[in-house]
Image 1 (cartoon, one colour):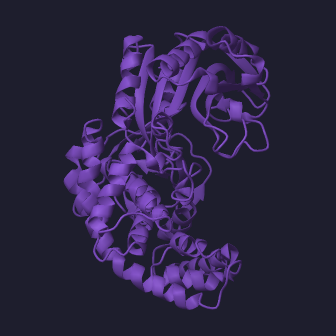
Image 2 (cartoon, rainbow, N blue to C red):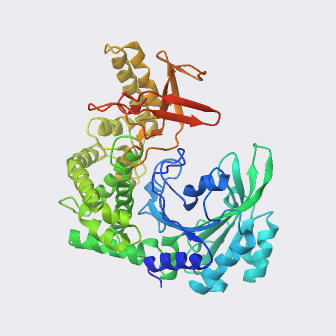
Length: 532
């Protein structure tokens, strides 16, 4: 039962038998939370259910949620390949109660699953609770028989979850396993807690409060449960390996890469094989969910992930594009659980092949120039920002690849110098824009675009979405507010409205929110990527 696919099905079958609705994973592009770049937890698709804005025909649910942490506030990209557990793509197994059961039942369900279904040794398990949560501590004593020394009270935000500055929040309880003295690390709350000996694999969140203001917190009328278990971490535990990359699924992906390259991993290059296996998953799932490589927003993060994998393929000696050749292996491993991979296989393959073919020349040239620029540098030195910016601006070699390539030599990059060089170029571009003969009403879009980035277009997948208003423009100037009857242009961070181009008219519709409604009479494209 220790295979990744078996663990996933065992988890979902267990909660199905316990009266939970099995809900399919939501897309990696959140439709109901414009503040997130990518879905990064199981509760994202249920956010409006927890807050009471949405009603569903069930009060218990369970999911296997595909998740990405790369870009934005939640970003594990730079750590992948260098640690035993960081991933850009992962699966979050979860069970949820919307005002149905609460702490005691949640702890009981978790304990029975991990000890009876998964067979984890009870004497190796321990938990944390929020330091004032006597109720949860009492239930762990009652249900698991834990003594006080195996119920660690944590006074920090690590054990208190909040949806945001306001909204549902509450204490949480994390379940850990002690993997043995041969692995360095100490229990949670100790100076050595960042080691890998004590591995956290399941977080139970007890939503029992609502944060009304910074200083006011009230009880929720219907407390709820939100839990998250990392599938890959649980697989590493059940398979008795120290790294998620040693589990069966990753072994098969690494085997596919080894076969395509003609050689397998050794100690010096195993990190590159791990990067390729992880990034294959995140890029493939993102493309399957409608994200395509671009120079802005989600598409830019996808491109960064792709290109990082491609650099590691080049390090391993790949003479031809590699990533697209590995897609069939991924589909074999995960296509049954996620049929969108099967449906999107041709698009994923073609996208990876095209992107890698285009990037190989840039990669080879950029690495050569970087080698020349750093041949006099040694471990502990710093590459100047001007050179890093020239590699990026003139030769198309991204900053993060420069950093990643130099990391192995323990050479850093002068980020302040890079930023100054970029700001100087933007100022020159802005001056050129202002003097290019554009109408005065058009020049306003340049600083809006520069400040907020391009608009993410969602219209190929949906006709309805939530977004954040980023700018209001009236009479060629940005304004802070508009009144009834005003004619204004609105910029949001993501939209299903199509901007007029290619002979197709711009979309019309309605934007509405708390206490306002705006009729949209047209949608235009401005400043290379803004939908207005």
